[in-house]
Length: 101
Image (cartoon, rainbow, N blue to C red):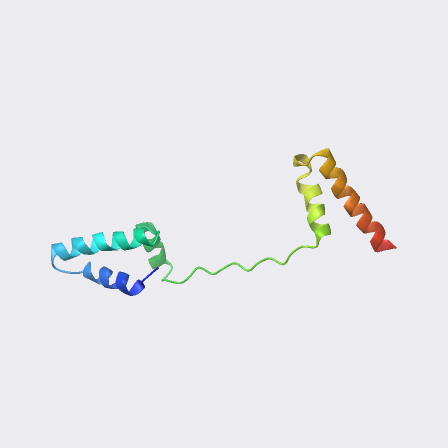
């Protein structure tokens, strides 16, 4: 959350015994959330997570081009044109010939 100190102060005002303060706090929280591109659901999700930042997934190690070409042939052959299939097949055949030489 952006400016969590301000947001935490506003949340504390929700416990006020004055209706006007509580209502003003709700409006201010709503404005703060919207200004940061969030909504009440985002706030509730953050509370459920215990305010922990979501872990960033590690980038996958890049596959060798031969593995990518084989994946394209095996999994996506029905979406490739005849020219694309021929190209991938020729590349893989060339790689096999070069590797065995």
